Length: 403
Image (cartoon, rainbow, N blue to C red; front, side):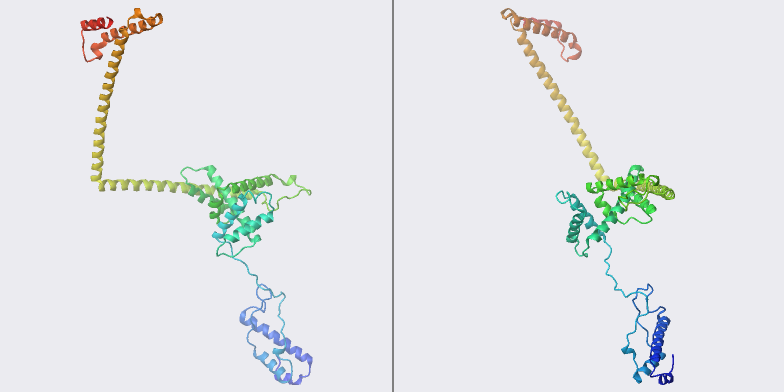
């Protein structure tokens, strides 16, 4: 920086004015570097400038010299920024989707996809336009989202939930004994984190989509496309091959497959640990249940006595009821025997000589059967019947019936 004497000697020189201005700008830049640790540009070189530091003594002298003798002062010269980039305005970026917004998006996709009127033959833009309108009508206090933002978020949800669904299906197929559904979801999330290198954070979306037929159809289509893409080998590809879906991931390589198997083994060990913990938990529950029963026995002893008395009374009533039923059965049997006896007497009293030929044959057969039955009853009556009749009484009874 030059002093005031040099300024007086070279006042009329335009080169001097330019030299002073360059020195002033350089001093500003050096001062900003010394104070803030950075230049007039920010660290990213975007052209957004930091506030200049206070003028140094040299810059004050230069400005005073130029203003005092009719030169150009700092207020009259626009100092251009020292930087290579352009000045840009920061963009207003929306925040990430919340759990509530994820749920609204999944439900909106299901409603529009399952609508038989709007889902038939609609174009992609129209389809996502309806989903966007449905989402924004249900968003509540959350910000309005554009169609591109919503479709991008859905692509992420579809990819992440689809991968987790694959791990969950693998756990269900393996079906380790003693592992509950919640433990299977935990093990599937562990497999996801081990292979995908990040945690699964869309469990709320999985619970909404997992049992929906439209999602299951989409999942089957995704699996079919992935399987067909894995069947294409580099030997079969040539310059005339058209990539129908550039967003599909490449098949897993050998090293990645080994790493995946290693992670899967670790996940299986994790599932085994979860099974052991479940068994220990069940044993603790059983011990707690036994202790609770013991305490309950000590507390409710009077109630237990009442229950036993009630059971004893019930057994007594059941015995009485069985005896009553046996007596009723015996009475009914006696009534049946009396009825049978009356019917036998009526048949034996029929005069066969007065019957028609076919009646004669019929009643004769019945009478012979009755006589055989009486003879059999007479032979076994001393054992099976409590009343003992002598042979004379039976003969008299038969003779009276015949006559």
